[in-house]
Image (cartoon, rainbow, N blue to C red; front, side):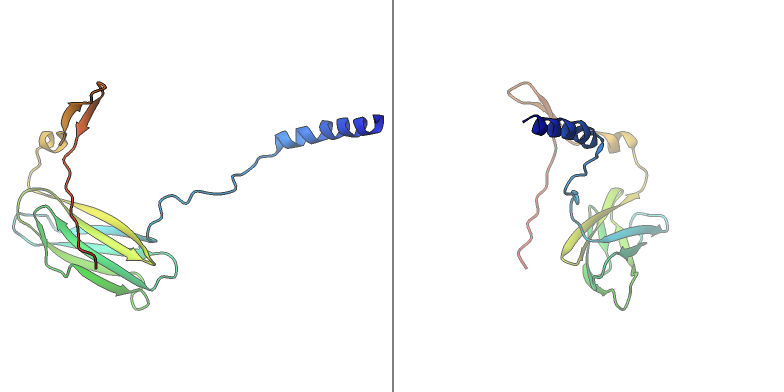
Length: 169
């Protein structure tokens, strides 16, 4: 019995400090929100003017072994696009694709070109701003919502929402 107690004490003496000094890493790493392995940089070629076409240059960069890039373009606000709304790009023929879109603003203000990219079964969305004309910073920075109070007395800002439903393909 004394021998077992001695082994137990010696084991605790040397084992506990070793456990305290050991760093443990988590057994998993959160990948974050999965999205398409593609990055997009853009450049406006020119100065935006009401009713005048302006060119948007898009540079797509991909990672991984995907072969086809599917892209959908949409003008938000008062922007119209002269290009096709959707295209498929073969990354075998064009490993670092560059596209130019012609955009025509029909009223002053801040508008967005939305670019939706699908690659390897995953998708990613980009919104590219375009400011047309002078901007009144007070109007631009003014909150869009309405201040309301809940029955519990908590203050909230109710924001306007827009829902669009696309038919299944």
